[in-house]
Image 1 (spheres, one colour):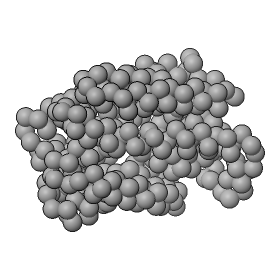
Image 2 (cartoon, rainbow, N blue to C red):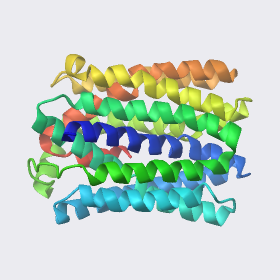
Image 3 (cartoon, rainbow, N blue to C red):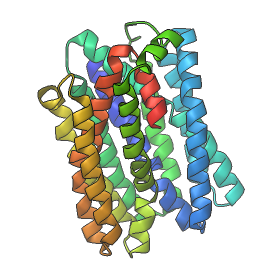
Length: 324
């Protein structure tokens, strides 16, 4: 099996892990009896942990000159702490294991995206042809996780998470070492990146779009539950959202244009506003699920354009860190 095929499989598995963690952690915490303030504390603190962990593991990867070995360590720790998290009920344990999972699982995202970009460029294929499998894994696992929670109970997620983590380790073990392209981020390249007005506008647009998007990612499942929806509906909502990304990523070679990134990000920001404005007024959980189809015009458009804007500066990891 060649490098792009292995990487497609790894994308599917890693984003399946994310699907069990990002949308369903708040739902799991809610089922364990935590109130919204406690859930918000865990998610918010996890965000700060991610801000530290992503550049830290990125520097470790640069120093060791390898991504694959770092991924193996991160995946092993993620599988262990993911199992412990979804097997816990006490508030102290939930906080501890959630922070550890944020520390080990979330840094895999920028490393994976770096691999996606490098191998796509080295193989002469489009980035979207690889990243599409991540959206597919996220959507399929989100749908499956909702049904697992409903029929087998919330604690069953621990076994499922560990199993997917182990399979991810096996796949990553056989992945070849990615070719090294470009130079690592330096202070001079970062200064050059931040020295023009377009960059400042880019960061403002990312901030405006990312904050409400993160709020939605965190509390959508809890909101659906409060409206009377089941974990199955939460899974269906994320299945529609992630599933709608597939065609956008797959066709990114056709619609994505260099030099038009800020216009494209503004376009996605406008649809973010429409999506979240409508979410505030919808009280039917089933209708809220259907609304997630608007993801097709928000996240994949926003994300692809943002990566295209930063990658010429070899600052993809900076973008991943900033947008976290």
